[in-house]
Figure 1 (cartoon, rainbow, N blue to C red):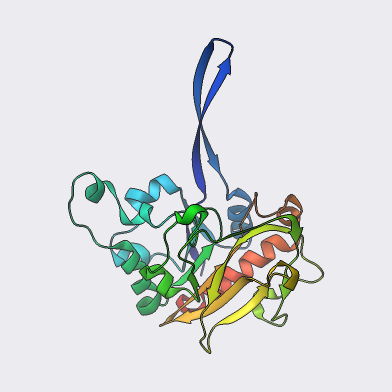
Figure 2: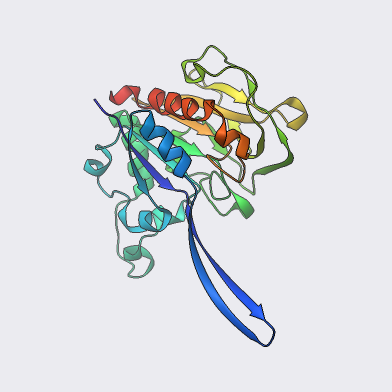
Length: 258
């Protein structure tokens, strides 16, 4: 059976003003940040729906039936407000189902696999704007978020330290990993089911990099760095273990719904 994955986020729009002497004009560009990640999962045999950040505002499922189509949901660089505040609420003050509570229930009651990937709008994010702290989604993760800007910037680069080298998620990954340029700082939950599989070196604070756990019937994971540039170096994205890491991780997350 082909496992189906929903990737939510990893897109953005940029607005620029170009000044040329007396004159100026504006431009808007649209960007995707997950193409290598999606390609790796599809090559690994997964079916991937890539729901861009602006699409998720209205189209992230409102009912359990919509989530039951998936084995795993991945939140990457998308803030909690994008799922909490659809136009029905923000513009028209109408009530709708709380989709953060729905996602937690899907993990705990339906055996779904949930992964949060790091970034400037993941966990608590830049200036604390991602706002996942004290949400139902945080409650389903094996980590908790800080209540403020949680970025750990490492422009000099740092290599992962594997703390559970025999774990199935790390199968087939040998040798040194390419450098990372940053992570979100999180707090690991103190529970028997929670495992820190990889972390940063002690001279970079020893912060968790990959944390696994269980939530009710389901599984959850936190990868505190990016899935592509800028926190992943070009060497990391070109690394032969890049695809293996993600297929291993998503495969482990989705075992409860196999």
